[in-house]
Image (spheres, helix red, strand yellow):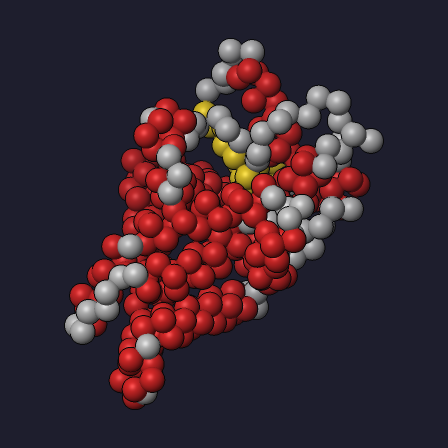
Length: 316
């Protein structure tokens, strides 16, 4: 049965520890199931910077802003979910000893560490390995397009291997199940069905706007963008140049992701989403009913808050 009052806007999300974060135009909602079975929520009023500063809403620019915003929002959601998990293990005295200031410092360090780790694993290592190949092959050394193609292939291989290793960890597998629950819930909403567990179970766990697809598009986009960046003979300078061009690559990838999601009826754009959808076989797993219940809880609360906001009564 189709919902008569479906709100017409996109909703995104992210799996967290034993829960799901949903992001609507004006709110973020995190729902987490505690060990007791209770679902706890963290809801926050949040509008994209690009909606407040029109200059930042320009194509390419908005993709860069969105990338940093999602890092901040995603890390904050993970912090909340991990805090709930820790509270199940801590004593009351330990809980009181923690301050909000300490949590904010931890959030900043988490974002910084994530950036450094990602740049090292997906920028430094692939470039270093490609340079080794280039030094031993005159064909690669003289063909910069081939050099960048090999760099992109190595990045993709590292990413796939990294995800494959993560799936072996039971706790990460549960996060991937919640990732599947997030997708199924959003698909239920986008199809206009009533937001119930039974309806969500029927939906696919793959979604064209997934962050997994975004990462793969970033890898592919980098092959083309770096072709126009002059190769410097010094490895360190070459590496720094590539890092400096990351915002442009993120902007291009964001626009391509939006196009593929908007034009799913086009055969060309459907083909472009295939690699990302295939990768989601690794990054998503089939959720159980309780996981779907948590994801739907976040989604329903997001929609409820948006309705209140539309009535000029934003809940903060």
